[in-house]
Length: 114
Length: 109
Image (cartoon, rainbow over all chains, first blue to last red; front, side, top):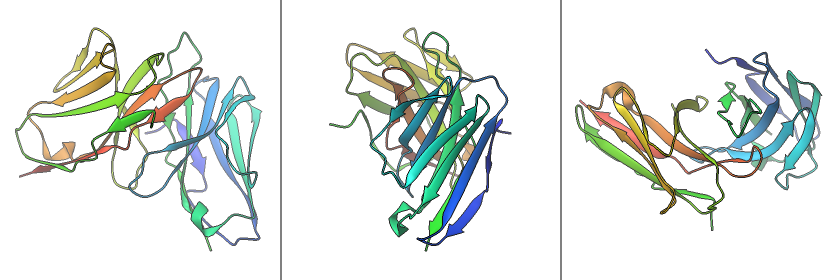
């Protein structure tokens, strides 16, 4: 079983809604990631937090807003999304040690924007 | 040019066959390399890291060729349960982990 926990597993939201995706890990990892995956496509990197600071933002629209309240938690706040944002949103974490970046994924949140 | 390129397949092989996947990467400064397995509607799961010296885990062997900038995965004695999508991943820069498009494998009885 994955040690990265994501909630909710499924989410349906309207284009005017505000919602948040949550991710939690207790492996002591100091890097956490958000990926977006569309059907039959690979995961696309959105954000990376390293030691609770945003280190990478892959030109993601501002309607996606990440937050890292502490080293174990990662949130993704959603506002005014579009139907094309419907996808599987995956959280991952990895250690920060000498380039060892074996990343472990949560089960994902399947998001549908209507 | 994409960071990571991978043949999407599909590969349809009989049980017991040996199958190999390749993946090329564009950034020569890439530092770490991985193979992941993803089942339908599930999250990617780490299969193995790929080291310069090559590494083996049971029926699975991974190789890295830095000069030609590719990594490979060999699966021997394929099982029905090996049917999945296999994703290569390349780490470039600090925690910048990019995935290939994935190769779909179906093992046929």
